[in-house]
Image (cartoon, rainbow, N blue to C red; front, top):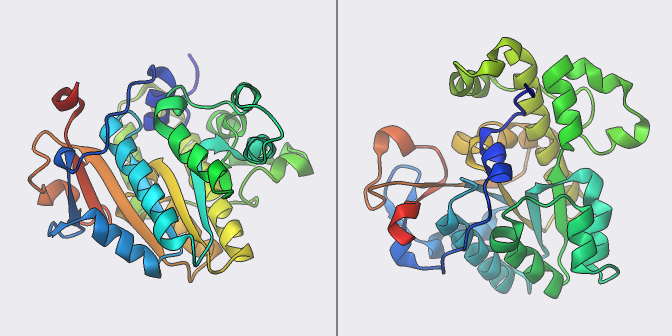
Length: 297
């Protein structure tokens, strides 16, 4: 049996067939602040004025969330693009394909060759392509932020020390080694998520591989912001990575302590018009509850 690789949400994304993205409609979701007070997409956009990086935490197979992400990115480019550089950062592409992403954005290669060489997720065309194409049209940077899966798998099988055997070039595709440990709160949350999974026999290694994922994404964002202190990065990742400002956010603040990070956590909810204080309080600076897939299929 293959070793479980870090994020359950990612595996769902890789195994599911692409679904049709629903049109953006404010009838399909509700926005709240972290305490459950009613908010709006306009308030999210306004908050970006004092933000260096916004982390949009998604459930990878939720089409309403993808429509919201596309809307936020489009409006961020329109509202902030004239006065500061807006960049798109994606968990969905790995750092070793950055050159392929750049070649496509600059028009050097066709989209067919881009897709053949960049290992896109199965739902790329419906859910992430609209954002990448907008970036291409506006000549914006797209950051392939994630650690290559083969190295994440190395850690999940053999522990973090396995990375010491990598070449200098390979290490460039990861957060600096040794990368940071997860916080106690994040590790406790992750171990609870994994409880009872077949891979739990190697849970220490899997925790380390999850930390590599978080550290590499945060390092990718930090490196970009270090080159352009006035930029705005819009980063997409599975919500577990950034919920409650844990995981990726914690690593980011180690790499770049003064980064102003905003977390938007999104999830489907049967009663999306009611904020669940027990489940959702503090999971994001903003929390967006979306109509479950059955409501719009």
